[in-house]
Image 1 (tube, rainbow, N blue to C red):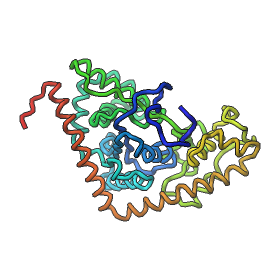
Image 2: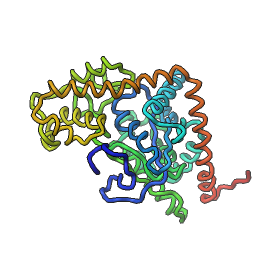
Image 3: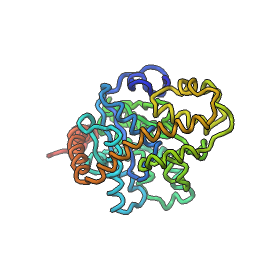
Image 4: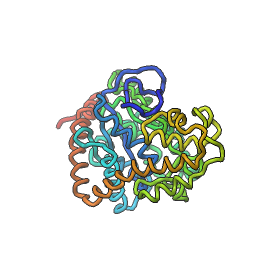
Length: 357
């Protein structure tokens, strides 16, 4: 991959394999409405989603509320968080006139295709998934069946649209590999070349944003310390204070990223700056080489506040009009359904399921 998001994404070259691959025709991705969206969600997902608009492929983005209910959710809170996630998409620049934006549960093809894939996927594949192991822990017998089958639904999310590319972080590559396995097994079992081989789009210096308190841990809303993350609902003062108090070290900044190999907190802050500024991290270091964090942190705080404050304001505006959010999601669901239904119908036909209506 090239340095950073200092240019428009070029999907034809944006794979994890290093070599150029076929340019994608349709990009799909989603965010779970778990609440508490952070800077990591913005830089690793939302900012990239907006950037892919107009680059050639059709872009389809989804609030994956069916994934959310693999663990129990308070219904009223789930409704609120689904709207909040949609507001974040919109505030970050996802344009419903240029992309399809909807919530998953409004398009029945996701759940129906997931069941068909449950008959193709192997149980052993599911038990090997890292996320299932992490979430179930020692209580795997007590978690929902939905949590185990989560990757099959994720495969359905993507393949219901014959999407051939998915923007993901490194921590989601295993799920995408399983999607490829399910597609390949379906094609093999039924002697067809129907579902595409999906490619990951992994690029940019901050596809994985780390905690402000521990550079070895991913920034997360579940961290007990609010100081570890920047929330998309934080105001400019809160953003500045958190960055100024972020853990660093006493060494000056080097001239290239090679000099930050063993300095995870410093590397994280440089990557955040680079992603916010649409620059390569080495270009950032060239500007700050030899300076300490006493100079770098205020510059980063100003940049982060200037970038995120307008997004926070737009989110608030959207959240003040839930009917408008619901209208946008409903229109997006109708467009998504029109794409997914023919693919679902053909899947059933391939499998020998009678369709008389």
